[in-house]
Image (tube, rainbow, N blue to C red; front, side, top):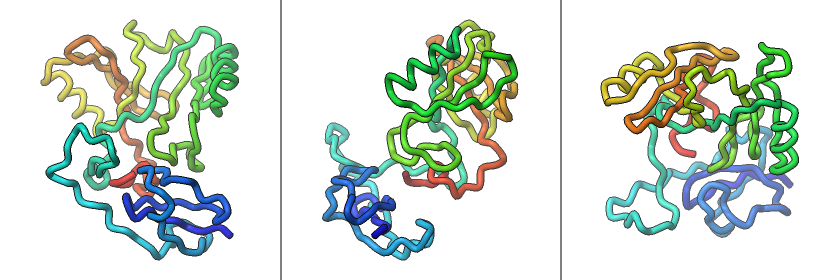
Length: 221
């Protein structure tokens, strides 16, 4: 029988067969005796059991590696979250085969503006229907042709921002540089910036299609 389990330790809800309950919470690692269960009614959002996330401990020792309350993000904002990685390639078929065989990543084409040089999306772990990570710590990424980077800095990480223009201004106000101003790829609004030490980052503006009901849009993981 499929049930919804809610972790009492961290408030994370998940669906599982009662005969195959995971040995620990996917979010915080708590044991099954911390799970509260209820029947699955076709949609996890219809669950009746809700647990208030624990409040941060002001006396928490930063050297204590046990689970602690994650950062609370502002409502309706994903600003500042590291969302994806970017690996560049010269041969699309080779890099796709490499990561599919090595890590069993699911790799799908997002955009084929240039023949034989597609932008590819790597799903590194279980995801939802829109390919976003469902389990804490998984990150997704892009395989991108080398010539797509016009800055020569080969940035490898993509950080989400609420407003691209405002973020670019903050970069420059704090000693960074804009390497490539706002541009679009496959309906994404991007920019490339450099920090004070010469490290390059992609900035990605939160798209208008976000409903704020997605798992990755919640205040808590």
